Image (tube, rainbow, N blue to C red; front, side, top):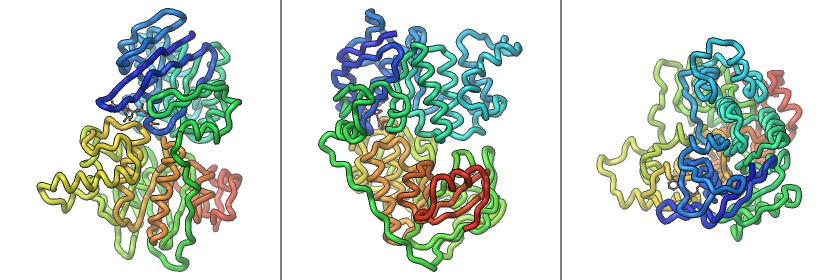
Length: 500
Ligand SMILES: Nc1ncnc2c1ncn2[C@@H]1O[C@H](COP(=O)(O)OP(=O)(O)OP(=O)(O)O)[C@@H](O)[C@H]1O
């Protein structure tokens, strides 16, 4: 299938999400679509998928102009898309979710074994470890992403659009995805890969298309561009900041004590976690997603029920054994950037001002002064470069990366003693990633503890003071970052133990 997007424009109010975009997608190619947060990548692909209608322009498939008014029409034309936000039914099993979306199979056929094996074939190729009988709500985010992918692959689409698929995948899962993407292209199908990761481009792209502020600024052979060239095209005149720096923590003083905590929920368990952090210390938590990271973060922030142990911050218990979380209305001592901010960190149908004050709701006057709140919100929006920058906009109008910035702006404002950050750079472009890191490290510099959960080992090795590895809910080793290496961390991730 050969697709041409001709003169596509799309406005949301005064925001020009796409401005006169002309893009060709060839049969049998992997096209990486790059651009800074809010550049218009998702909007362009959602127009091709019939989720949005362009204000002007046309879509031409194999020489014929087509009208794509809904995703159903797009699917009938052989176009499938996996979004940044998932579309699965949490109360149903993996297999049931796949069966429901399976195009040629009425539900009553689900009794027949051969149908099941066909429905599960793509999932098995992508992730043989996922148990098809498991409920979706019990899956880690990376696993949910893979089920979404399998759903779209089952449509047998001629064009598969993937919106930042590797943002939530482990390195091993990403490798499997890259191989599958190459296989699709080699069999004559096309893949558009929206991404912020240059390793995706290197691993599997044939061409790159780069967008900036709604416009397509360059299309080139993927091998013909260096990373620096691509960054410059993405960012235009914006300067990419130098790598942020971190200072050494104050030694021999204990500020945060995570004292033998154990907890469990529907998805994971953590067992006997013992960690002590000094003022100004950045402790990275490495590990394959789904090994208890989210529960650990919730537990430390006082948002989970502990089965054992307690968490003490500045001598005060912030999380303890008991039937109720200690800290359901988090106080200003803890900044918490949760995983999947859209689901766990924002009220999407409220405006940016309200979203930026959610952590201060307790103790706020019954009728807060709107102008004061808006002025405070505007300051944070500017400081964290959230786009669009209008505090009266709804959170749901923001692009994925800008939502991540919004949550970080709220949680890193004020003077927290502890910052718990889960994958804070997820979905962010290179400029925004460095800006968020700087904001996080500023708190460490003034003595706050940072518990930083990340899958980006390079970043942890570069910026964290120590790295603790979490495997199957247990800490398998704690290493000073200066002497740690990828091999040792990789080994610890498999569950092998090492004492510091
Ligand atoms: N439904 C919507 N309503 C209003 N504005 C929107 C809507 N969807 C997107 N926008 C705006 O359009 C612009 C482009 O957004 P889009 O999601 O296409 O960017 P993106 O390049 O995919 O960004 P990211 O890398 O952060 O996901 C942004 O300014 C965004 O705020």
